[in-house]
Amino acid sequence: MKVGIIGCGNISGIYLKNASRFNNYEVEAVADLIIEKAEEKAKEYNIPKVYTTEQLMADPTIELVINLTIPAVHAEIAIQALENGKHVYGEKPLAVSREDGKRMLELAKEKGLYVGNAPDTFLGAGIQTSRKLIDEGWIGKPVSATAFMMIPGHEGWHPDPTFYYQEGGGPLFDMGPYYLTALINLMGPVSRVTGSAQMTYKERTITSKENYGKKIQVEVPTRLMGVLDFESGAVASIITSFDTWHHQLPYIEIYGTEGSLSVPDPNTFGGPVYIKRKDHSEWSEIPLTHGFSDNSRGLGVAEMIDAIEKKQPARTDGQLAYHVLDIMHGIHDASRDGKHCILTSSCQQPESLPVGISEQLFGK
Image 1: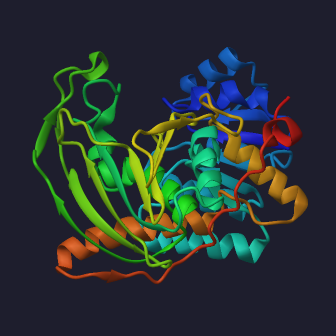
Image 2: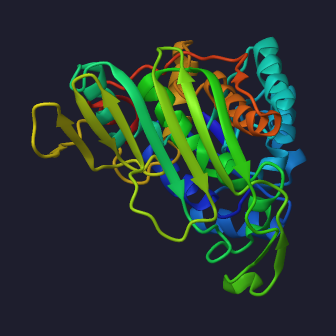
């Protein structure tokens, strides 16, 4: 399938690099508001066409758009692509607002097109191995979980971090999709949430070299604690923070009736995966059972294209991404309103990937 990428910023490099790994799509064109960025990426990765966004949308040979723009325009670009008859795979989050997310899914359904969304890290070796262990009953029935993403923020390393502190940013909207998508993959959809959202610093100073010394006005909460009630009856707690210098907490742990599972960083594709059953005295590292343990961004695109060809739901389906969006808004809403938020969305728990899928379908 011929694919076009819109947005040639920081994340585009790994998508362009990895496109050559997968056997069911190739990048035909790149576009960016700053045409020099698109030209630079096209030259570096030997992409044949450099377009404006409008030119890319108008090209009938491009069947799918990979949307790597900033969160504030995710929905705008996705809707434009759908209106032009193209499937869309976007970076996280699906959209900034629930209303825009719904509109995307409704338009895709109306036109018979697919919407897929990052993160695709849950398709990697680490979380797929964790899913296999849960499905095979190694920790019994999952009853609770914890998830922690706590860092000092992006202004120390990102060349232009301002958007992380504007609407659609913050630690929950930026990093929460990795953790929430992993939890839904491992434990199923969520029915109710509550939480607390706070802002520590109203202004931040960029210390990365490109914009060193520039001040950022913070518009969103930068420290959020949430409680998730799953449809299965399990309960999880999640903390996301741009206000934490150091901690020793795990990324994700799942606690079951027969033991506990330590899940690797959901912002990566690999391990390690550890398990400790109720009768064990030590944690044991479990060998990874699946492929794609390195940085395999773009795997979700390959999986979605495979689903399109087979006329079946994609694991990175837009309904999953919308459910994640709804959960994140629900935590904000609960903090603002001082009560639980009953979610109106749900999704199918993604099917696990078969062992050996990298050799069978997607890898060259």
